Length: 280
Image (cartoon, rainbow, N blue to C red; front, side):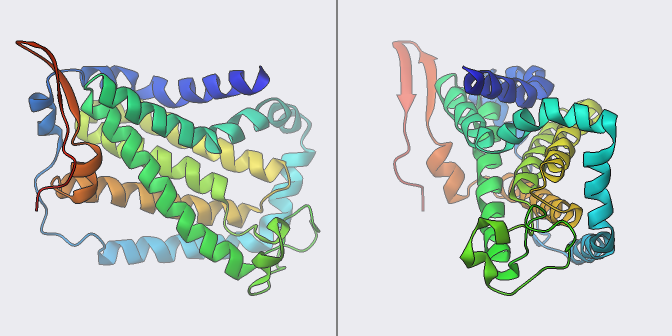
């Protein structure tokens, strides 16, 4: 029962900020097609991305000497301690496994209700998370960083390849933070395309929730602050690039395969259109 309440809460927290925009998407599919942006000639990755990556790397490197202090503060301040005791389990469940349930539910509901925006959000959010997790998994196994609960006095405890020895040596970077920030990036960027004036509340709600996930992992002694920073960076890049790619390449194979099913009301009743194979 507790698990069910947590997952219901997870869906509500994720969907509520964008629900007005999603249900504006229950207009006919032809009208929704205008949400896709025109094909861009700009490369998917640019020099700006390299600058951002260097910036995040610098912040993470600067945070490593302070990792121990950040963790001690979250666990030691009485008011902060009480807060995270109440919310840590819930917000971590929102990230994993909640994000996959949410993404799958949005995609399925969008397909069944002919709401392309909802299906789009579920598909692209899940895709960004899967790609981001693949990247972080490679780094986790290679970096071999010990989690704080192994020894919270050794934030510099890295050893190449040690991640294969067990989960306690897969601290860097944070997968939960990746999930939270990838979802936040996708939802915020999709909202910016659908209804730009909504970003002022969608963005803070989603990124604030993602930050809470990362802080909860630090409170639980599962991650250092620098783990959270790098996980957030990978999540943001994954989310934003997935959205940009799909909307500047609206005829891509993934969307044609998975968003190529529509159910609509026709003269003879409900009609289903299924594209089994993508157009060549």
